[in-house]
Image 1 (cartoon, helix red, strand yellow):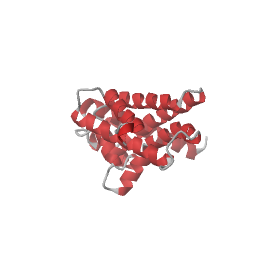
Image 2 (cartoon, rainbow, N blue to C red):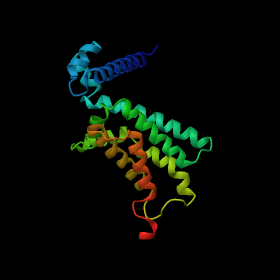
Image 3 (tube, one colour):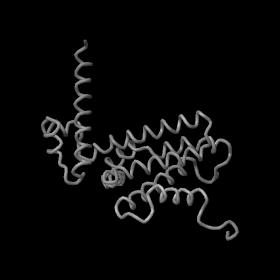
Image 4 (cartoon, rainbow, N blue to C red):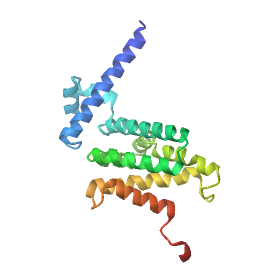
Length: 203
């Protein structure tokens, strides 16, 4: 067996153990109160080893968010391949994401804040790990190619605006809550984005 391959597999297993332990601690005790030392101790590694795999605590959440995005992309690709209408798929992805955020309500705010981190390198890393806009772009591309989307904005910009809206609405809901479930709040926001806020005859 190649020694390099063995070392790589050992590193992958160690990273997976640290990740799984960290997520469990975040869910059980809260993200803010869980420290890197707590995670290292529960993972049976040194604090330095933890930082070798995750340079800061929020980086663990980026792995979690990346897993969620991959599941959403897989769902979208499968549904589009089966012939589902793009808007139907968009609402399905929207609902699945809202369900995930509702289940893991305490994990979402620090994850969202990381996307808006004032450190540009960290914000860029978070944006790359959480490509919601790319999933939306994938879903809307058939409509764009069919001439069903507005032409004064690029598909990329439209997708970015929709993703940014999700981020802000879900963050506000996670932090403050409303009378409506998150899924309902998100559908309201998506309807507003797709249909507009001003009546057609008022323009």
